Image (cartoon, rainbow, N blue to C red; front, side, top):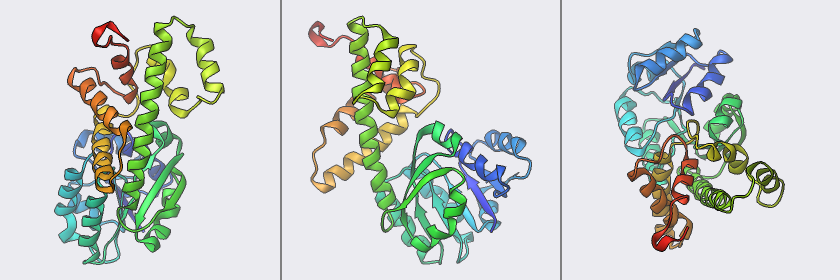
Length: 292
């Protein structure tokens, strides 16, 4: 079955690259055409579709990886009249569960399966084919596409009906934000106390405080380098989804409220560059009253 890919950003491009490298990808499309032509230059077996409509007409499985709910709705609205019964859409975007449920219901009416399948593992996980996928929606369709997704995923779990994957991603992002808050604040304190970085990072990483974010981002944070990673604006978008879900569930989260406040401030002051670890810049700032 032919597969196609829409969305070649920092995560989407390496994920699609695993499929193209195994000759499993027929065509790609990206809003910025340059990214699509660069991709097909790297993988000559794929071609650039002229638009999403052309792309979906040639594929049995369509993978999507876009930035936000409105982008996803617009894309589905553009192509749904050209979709055919039996096609499968796998959405790797991070959107609200309600958006996944809405689109799944619409597509089900024309016989098209929709799987909400957000991922976690960072850019490194995408490049190394080690992502974790949390999926909701049609279980039989997931069984059909799982062998393809195994090219870039280490773990794939079906978690329930449409929207379940996105609900799981909200839980994941709450944890990501909490860890980022703790690591950035702790390293800022480490600097304030003038503790030596190299032995401290070894000690912290070897004990109960060890975690992926500390391992992958501590050294670059201390170098004030944030070029590679997860855009803070995207995390902020995800956290607002999480905040809505918490409100709907009657659940109080101090972490999500603090992280939204911090990342909003970081972005507003123009310091939220490249990766969410740039939060350390905010943690280094003196607090009102001269306290740090």
